[in-house]
Image (tube, rainbow, N blue to C red; front, side, top):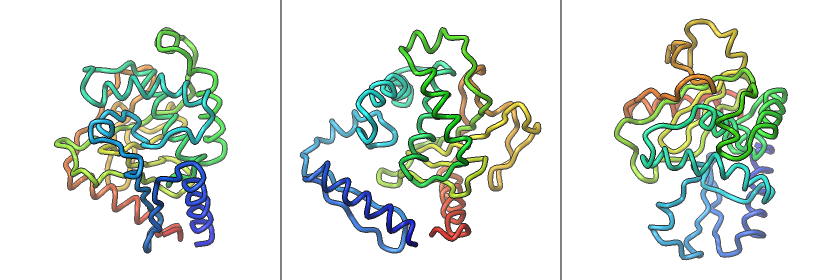
Length: 239
């Protein structure tokens, strides 16, 4: 409870200092909170054009944000259907960046320290221009990730950012209409792995060397993942 309270106090102070027109909504019986940015007068069109799936910007240094922008812009175009496919190295680095930023920003997920530093090192060494990334032969670590995406989309307002609170793989997060699970030591994984009640074949796990793909799920399965992630937090004594 003290840990969560500390995070909420930090976020409240950060919003007050950096976004004076925004309204921080205190949580009620949960570790999720909302920030109302309506005071900034964003139009619906401007909000729809936001391609940052994490939905918050400039918490990291300006230079870092610019580097991540290469990944976010490309993935955002794919996410919105403006592109039919995406380079697997770009997609891989994008999701590693999501995990790393969620972990160091205390955004609902805990990671083992070794994994956190490994992701930082991979990102720091390999985020360059688009062409440099896709043409590079540099090894990108031994991680793999599986993507689940709701087939028919989700109700506006049902999206959020959640993550498992146990600092070991698989790290499972819920972002927008995605559920993503990240594994370390991909090469040592068995032919089948489990994510909650799901059995996943290793061949369905994305790496930077395989064409990007995802598994379609129903809205009911999406909610089941969400409930499992929430239960994980309660079981860890962090609810």
